[in-house]
Each structure stands twice: as C-alpha cells, then as structure tokens.
Amino acid sequence: MATALKPARVRDTVSAEEWALRVDLAAAYRLVALYGWDDLIFTHLSARVPGPEHHFLINPYNMMFEEITASSLVKIDIEGNTVMDTPAPVNRAGFVIHSAIHAARADATAVLHLHTPHGQAVSAMAVGLLPHTQTAMIAVHDVAYHDFEGIATELDERERLVADLGDRHTMILRNHGTLTVGATVAQAFLRMYFLERACEAQVMMLTVGRDGLNTPNQGVAEKVEAQTSGAAMTVVPDRLAWPALLRKLDRIDPGFRD
Image (cartoon, rainbow, N blue to C red; front, side, top):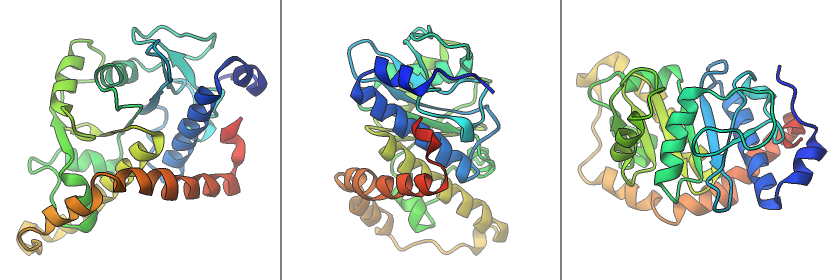
C-alpha cells in the first residue's frame, strides 16, 4: 500500500476548493469499489484542479480503490509530471485518456473510466447501447463511441478520443469499457451509474435474444431525453444523489475524507 502524505500536510498546502474536490474524488473511488465496479488497480477517475495551471488529480497506481483518500490522490500536470511530492506512480493509460479530455473540454472537471464486465460486454456488441430500458434511455442520447486501439499508452490517440467524444458526456470505448465526464464529480458519477446500470440490464435482457425484446413506442426515448436533460443533470446529482451518497460512505467509513 502506498504511503500517503499526512492529511494535515496536504490539506494545509492546497486551496479549500482543491481539498473539497479531493474529498469528492476520493468518495467516487470508494463508491466505485462499493458498487463492485473496480478492476483491482487498473481503472482511473480524475478531477481537474481549479486554476489556470491545468493540473488534475488521479489515483496512485498502487492502491486499491477502497484505500483512496483525499490526501493520497496524485496531482499531475497536463504533461504527466507530478506536481506534489509522492512515492506513488501514475497509470500511463490513465494519464493519456484523462489528460486528453481535461485539456479539450472546459466542462470536464471530472472524468471517470471503468472496465466493468457489463460495460465491457456492451462495448463488444456491434449494436452498442440499446434504448430498451428507462435507464438506457436516460443515457443513450448522450453516448459517443471510440474504437479500440490497444491499451491507451500512445499520445496520438488523444486527438481521436477527443474527436469521438465531441460534446457528449458519456462514451463507450469499444472492446474496452465505459467513460463519463461532468462539470462536477457528482455529475460524472451519476452518468456512470446510469450507464453501468443500463449495460447490466442489456446483458441480462439479451439472454432472451433480440427477437424477444419489447421495443418502446416511437417517441418515448426522445421524451425521456427531454425529461432528464439540462437542469435535471445538475440538480439531481449535485443536490440530491451526491449528498446522500456521501452520507452512505460516512456511515460505512469516513476515512476517504482524510
């Protein structure tokens, strides 16, 4: 396990805004572990630090997600250089994927990337995400796709990744996994929750084959899009779901706040 800097030392050397962001991102790591979405140490969540420096926070590449704390997060710049002293390494693929999106999208404060079995399964389906459940209809209109190019360690993939994402907030990386972005950690997390639940349901429902599925009536998917877009994706995650999730974590183990 990595030796994190003492909480007081980190908290006393960063802004209040950065510390709050660290707490939220650490919470997201703990929640990913809690919901069984982690993949040992091999996926990554990040958050861009407020300010002109283009720094962002990411996990130490030698800690399990249930171990992550606000102080243990590694701060790096857009070139992958660590900004604060730390003995922990950073996942190269995590740097490539997250630096690309943070640099290109002003609204991408948080970027979450997972390799869940259900997300990978849907990522390997030529049909992509099907709009056959309410949860899928919340997500599907905002989904982009990016073809697999191998483990994302090459810098030139960043341009294609950003181009494929466009102005959307959710991405299925073909034959790879899932990704979401948000103006807050809460928004990115809730988008990931809907995407992962939709993928899980799709894998289960396809056991009957596509011919056995009930297709929603024409116009229903568009109605759900209108009902769950805009202000709904700000109020629900930031003011309702995220505070409840933080309370849940505090009941289980408030150590993520250290």
